[in-house]
Image: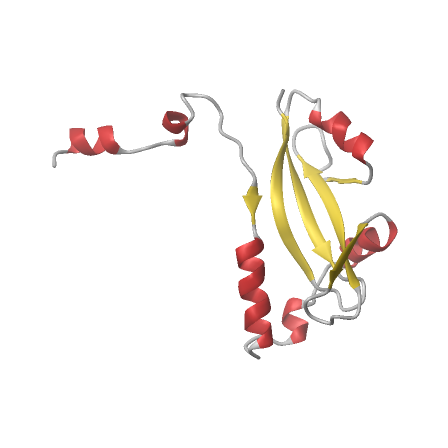
Length: 138
């Protein structure tokens, strides 16, 4: 094949979306499962997987959304979800979103933002990024 044929066959994000901006959900559940499996097989120590930043644990304790899912590491505490939004005109460390109303307000913004949903255990300090969602950009 010559280079012309190869360039005609290659796909880019703009080609797949008709030239528009393509934003999607990024899901990290497979990575999560692999990490938990490595821990359970004894290939990772608890201190290697339970190293959440104190600010994340504080947010999980005070404003995190309760889940009915037990921590996969300590199995003693139910996990809590914390959402941080990053993007233009937001603090460099992101904005911790605490209500659906606050998220709806951010979703109406013209700027493209990204919401990071993190699960955390307030007992053993396990944490994992679950997914990244597009917000705003209307």
